[in-house]
Image (tube, rainbow, N blue to C red):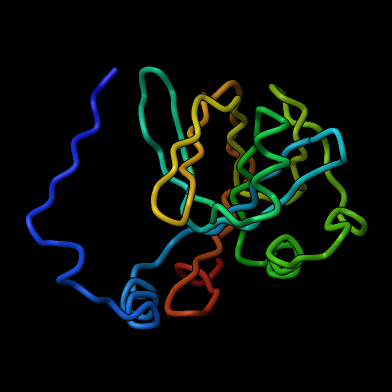
Length: 175
C-alpha cells in the first residue's frame, strides 16, 4: 500500500480562493452524471454524483466524492456497498429526484437489484458498476468512497448525460 505524501509549496494562509470562483472555473470541466445507490437498513439510498472515476484495473477499483455533510453518506457507509448507475441524456427527471433532499427518492422509480450487491439499478441507464466499499478517505470537505468492483455491465449505447457550466446536456445528437 502506498504512502500519502502532502506537498506544501505555498502556505495555505497565503492563498484565498473565492468558493464561487472555484465552482465557476471548475464548472468548465464537463463531467458524466451518475446515480450512486445502495440498500441500507433504513431503505434504499440514492444520490446524484458527477465525480465518478476509474481508479485501478488490478484490483478493479472505482471511486466518487461525496460531501462529508451529505445525508446519503451515512446510508452508504452502513450498507458497505454501492452501485454506480451511469445515466443517459434523457434521464433528467431521475437525476433531479436523486439530487434532491426528498424523503423517499425511490417512491416513483422502478429499479432492480444489481448482480453483485443487490443495490438498486435503474432501467434505461447506459451502464452500471457494482461495488463493495474498499475504503473511505476524508479529503477536505468531501469523502472519497473507493469501491472494489464485483459486477458491471454496459446496458445501452444511448448518449450520456453530461454536466457542463451548470447545465445538463449530451455529448452529441442522438442518431
